[in-house]
Image 1 (cartoon, helix red, strand yellow):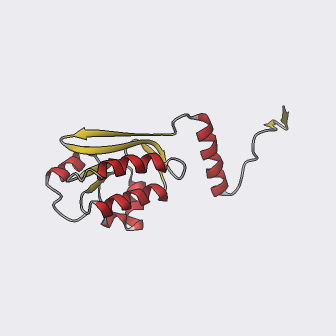
Image 2 (spheres, helix red, strand yellow):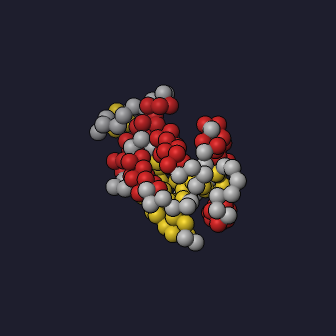
Image 3 (cartoon, one colour):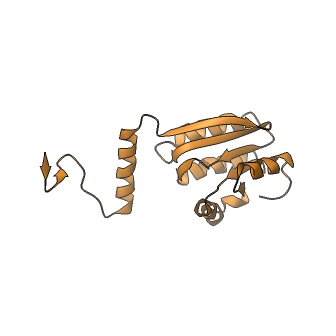
Length: 150
């Protein structure tokens, strides 16, 4: 049933961006059984954590679990490949900060989107992790044995 073309059970659109984002996430969760997939791959002997989907307050537990599982093995380097991540909020950034504290100078983040890279710079997280645009570049940094500052 509808009223002026809107389904009666649909929430009214919000002018508040936070409410709109929250509703978008609720809709996304309702439409998907797996809103976030996190793969762990081995590339040239380096573990690569690759989230696919949105890393946010609703999905961060799966991301945190996989990142901490890899970091707990104490590898010489870890790559977090955000190439397939469609969204990263402060909860995802907090996981990266936690990982960087556990493995100083050993976390390399692949961020092909300048907008996300600017977020790392603006928050200061770029001082704790190294940020590259491509996976080959990140693996190259790891092969150097962590030389240089982030």
